[in-house]
Length: 239
Image (tube, rainbow, N blue to C red; front, side):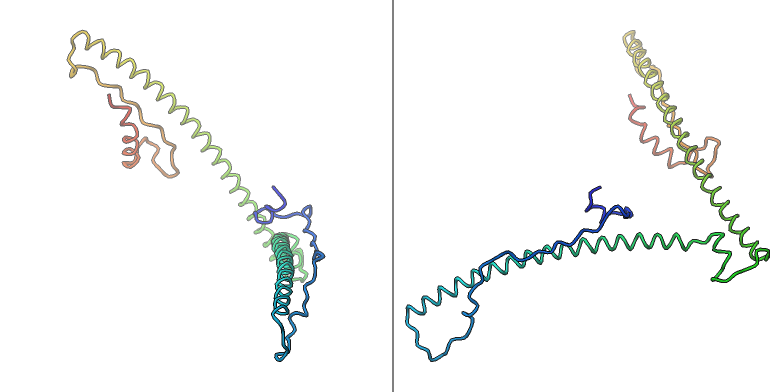
């Protein structure tokens, strides 16, 4: 993961990722425009046509130089704003890391029960012993639930693999049976047997389904499942 993408990901930041140092830029050496041209001229001062043309050229030149200064400072401001965005993302990640540490520290443990609300207690007190027993029972129950879910996932995975293998065997057996049936039908037709007297096409067994928790285990199939299976296998069951 790149150094930039970690700031917008859900991955917790660590101390190995350091904050970006600010890049302080000085403006490049640009020619300063003649700012005195912006000073107002006396209204009653007479100016010839040549003087007005010269002043117009000076104003245009000063405006071009001022435009260069504006573009340069705009680019510098854009870079400074980008640095602020990156630093803000970094601070947000640091805040998330600190919050995670605070949440871990605030979890109740046996040690925190020794001094509830910052006060001491008797280790032989019945309420204290009872609270420890309740906490231990909760941890044991949680560990048992985790182990049960893990065992259930492993059993379901093994069941799916077994059913997939069984389904492949069913399809292979059905394919062989259909080929034999087709060969037999061709032979019977060639010997003059009527089509209505031909043997029926072998029917493929239904796809085995995993046993859902709480469902019947006597082989009963729901109507919805049987209809969907019938639609899926109708293409293979036709001639």
